[in-house]
Structure formats: C-alpha cells, structure tokens
Length: 125
Image (cartoon, rainbow, N blue to C red; front, side, top):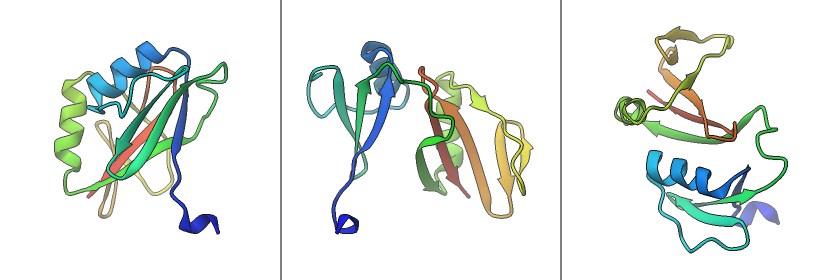
C-alpha cells in the first residue's frame, strides 16, 4: 500500500519569503516552481519537500528533516558554519559534544533550526 508510494516532506513556515531566503540562500535548494498559494516545492536528492505557510509553524519540537551525508559530513558542516548557521546542543544518551558536533563511535551529527524553528539534522561519519 503506502510503502510503495513516494512521500513528500512538508514543513510549515510563518513567512514564505523568509523561509525561501534560508532554504535557497543558506541551504542551496532550488525551487521546482513559482510560489503557489503560499507554498514552494524543492527536491533534496529524489525527495520532494514542500514549504508552506501555516499558523502552526514552529510548533514541532522534534526532527523535521534529516540528511545522512556519510563522509561529506565535515565539508557540509563547515559550509553551514560559514553561512552563519547556529547549531543546537542537546543532552543525548551515548553522544558527547565536540564543539557543535555530537559524536559517538562512528557517528557525527548536528542539529540546527530554520527561521521558524523546524529542527533540521545532518549526520555522517
């Protein structure tokens, strides 16, 4: 049934203009099409992502999007740092904090938020 269908990640934002500046300017996404009724579509690899305006933006307190980037972690982390991304620090079982990077045996991860508080995560090795 649904396990055979493609899904779309959907992120609520308060202001589409501010969100676009972050997703396009900071993260490098390219819009699939022009804004349509308060929403814009992107792709992350083969995964469609829809950013849409909602009064409920910023209410999720868990991961909204995550990328497993493997050996590219350090490069992506440095690029996000140079673009001014602020990283979150969490007290997570089994992980220690090395600067902004949470580490464990064979794992590196960082969490950061978009302008509306959606929690984004990259991990690698």
